[in-house]
Image (cartoon, rainbow, N blue to C red; front, side, top):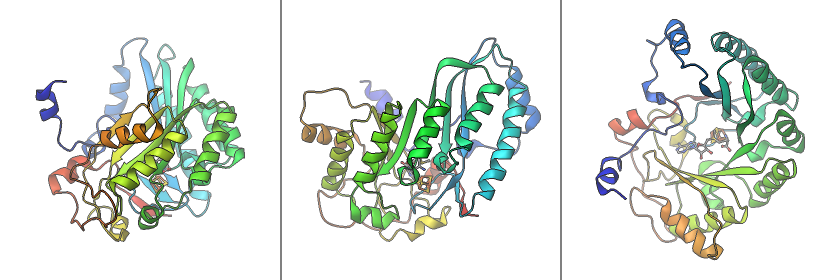
Length: 320
Ligand SMILES: C[S@@+](CC[C@H](N)C(=O)[O-])C[C@H]1O[C@@H](n2cnc3c(N)ncnc32)[C@H](O)[C@@H]1O
Ligand code: SF4
């Protein structure tokens, strides 16, 4: 390990889900500029496609993603129609000599799509781009809205990896963040995906949430390990209530606020689950110490402005 690099990169960074990262998006980049960048792709480039589905069935109060609560399917259907036009627009500028090796559907919750729309959107993508044989096709999934029809639809669509939101299994934490999700429901989702051949499973956790303690995080990590995921993504909670009004609904605001993320690949190990969960909990980097048990976390005013500007991944979460 190079201590100089650790020092240089130990600060708050944007959640790295796009390039440029969301805080650097600007109106100055228009269609013409984008088209010119597509034209400059090197010959026979290997491409990754990201498709965003900005809708959810309910709002989690910590959420920092770009999403809306959809109480009806009509806004989702209307968005899909715009998405198909955008896919056609981009595909017209990407020669078939470029191959797509990764496809990722994020959100929001892509499993809000109907079981018919899921394979239809995948088919539109395949017809429009040269998707390579064996390309990875990953989808972010909220297990609370995943029924067997949708699991079968994802399998038909060719999904190879599922990324499942958990955040925390502790009921007190779940109440505080307005996301109730039992272990049994999550386990059923993981099993259904595996039964349908979707074997690569990622689980998202968030640290720095209200009422979390070291013990409660370890208990969550133990449960997650029992699901044997191939990957765990641990996000540091980005608390930005000045910008994301719904985050002010969180009663006891947390103190580990500034975004960072760790990807952890649980290696096949001879260690006991308890020892493994302690090791992973340690790997989750906390910006300040966490109480070992019991007490609620102190209130906080949120991230300092400089951090807010670089940490904000995706700004709007509204209802439609
Ligand atoms: C699009 S969601 C995952 C799929 C699905 N919507 C769900 O929540 O189950 C992306 C992930 O971002 C993380 N996330 C959301 N808001 C966050 C925040 N304010 N700070 C840190 N991570 C956050 C959560 O781990 C969440 O699972
Ligand atoms: S965390 Fe996921 S399910 Fe919850 S509101 Fe955000 S995108 Fe939707």
